[in-house]
Figure (cartoon, each protein chain N blue to C red):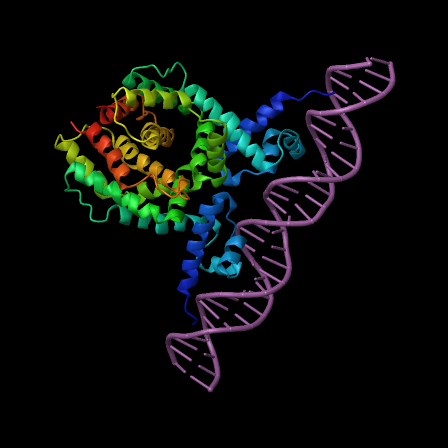
Length: 198
Length: 198
DNA sequence: TTTGTAAGTAAATAAACATTTACTTACTTT
DNA sequence: AAAGTAAGTAAATGTTTATTTACTTACAAA
């Protein structure tokens, strides 16, 4: 039998992300995607059940999995608190600034009910994304290093400002001198670290 | 001549927000909206040029304007730093937890290229949203009360974690006991205040 | 009370939509 | 080398889309 052409599968995914980043999730259509990927619409349906299936697999299996991997690169739950948080922030920034299409879909993860529900269900049923970070936080709370805030508070503090700064990074995209850089990221996360440490 | 029925205009706006909150921006159509509002599709086009015009006016003139008003309620740039930040956070939380449809569109403001660009252009051309907060921050930086971070850093720290906590609030929506409450908001913003003060 | 006019409607339009049908291609297995 | 089969295509499906056309309604001004 004829083998799957993995290049085509890859093209579908990367071009879908590109369209989402440039025109928005609300302007992604199966026909537009097929045309841009130079394939027949039918080919998408060989690899994905339907549009929803494509979107969910793209979000969970492609984008979130790679995002998690990049964020946790050379991070360990045993790290010193300040060191660990800085690692997470700089990893996030380094990864996302070079992966605008992935970042675009991550942003939709909070706004689109489809993606948001899929993410929550996945977390509930199959264990949580970013588990090492939760372990890291629990350890430092128990050791009395940081304040005993709810995990949602830490989630809000550790993940959302850095994503916002990445948004700003892309908004300044065309300018000759970038305002958002590693130094600024480090300063911002330094303030957060100071704020939650005892 | 026959006068405009303002109730219908209001119905269009509120039902559009409701559909966006429940089904997502990508599932809002003019016909669905007309049907849900019990009017003819043509009526929408009396009040708005087209779908894009509707979306932008809904976002900028309805949602953002009211959001800003609520956040700045009894806030003044002359306030003490900790007092001012707490006021902003509690205002934001109190307003958004009772306005889920508005919150849904605000979330899309960062992900949808259409809304994001409109917001940036509006800020550039017609002066900035949340001007009193910028004044407040400038004053406290100049007085040496808080660290001299870029305005984008303060924007990321002051606005994004609280929006994330509101998301969590709605995710816990159906539970008997709410986890996200004023006390948690106050604790979280207390950490931020401590982090950025000199 | 008549009349001009914008507000409003129902139904239609053409384009775009997600998905399928009917068929061909390319490659592995035999 | 032949056969079997999943991968792939082009074109069509019926539906839904944004927007418009042709018409009716309701009311303020005369």
